[in-house]
Image (tube, rainbow, N blue to C red; front, side, top):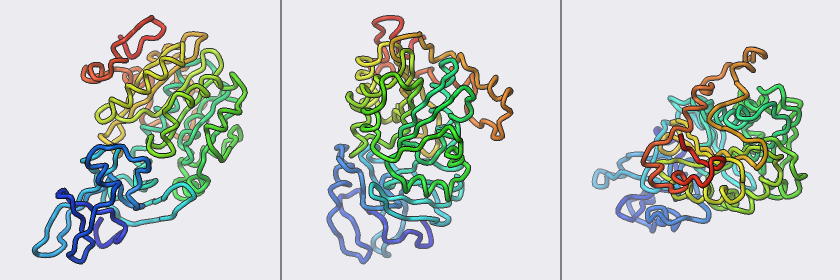
Length: 369
């Protein structure tokens, strides 16, 4: 950042293993940053900063004799950083669960950051919100009940509400402050909360799903944070089992599944677990989101046993819905062509994720042509 914006908030680290405190002396690097350098998972990926934790790097001269590049690391993508120029910090606060930052960037508009990790920007949020919502909902006919896990910014709700067949939308978000901040600074996303079909539940999603009636939902959309610290349980077998129990026969799950460029081990683990639980179809899809690590994000799509689901060929065309509804906000990223294209996988991903090469039965093929 320039002109001293956010000064004093940096978790600064130089590549030689020493950090500077700004007055020329050196201090030890915090353990979280050392573990990030070594690619060691950190239980709580907080580099004690609301502004930077693996996303931003800046070059600055500490003195005439000491001019070094300063890097920031996060255990989910150690050794790299993405820099956004900060024009103005609009909000900085700390909830019971995380640090929350909103700033105005020079290119991507307003940006929402949680614990130093970018969650969305005004420019490219459309890609993530539209794909994570419409990939599952356009794959089944006439969805009626939907659960959104996380998604406190309201963007997923905004997209879910496009579907007129839906009668009931539950959202379970643990952090009320995220909702409040989003309503103030991102009204174009938080508009999703205004839909009368939406029922907000502030609390722990694992407990909410444990208490949910069996077979209640046609679709569950998990818009979670990265699986580090408390969010780790959202990518583990018990959580997926509660989701499968809450889905009707032939119901679908869409779960955020990180980057194919950085997290093939995590993709492998999640697919392997879901193949044990979901007896319908399990597929991996992806989309381009420039402000996310490596510029892409993945989605795991699963269906329970019951009416077969062909995720790659949408049966509930968004184009027909849009023509019928004449929705006020036009789609910016998703259409039926992007839907099908999202399941085209590069050879390296198939090689590195063995589950993408396996196809024990046609109903359980994963990303195969």
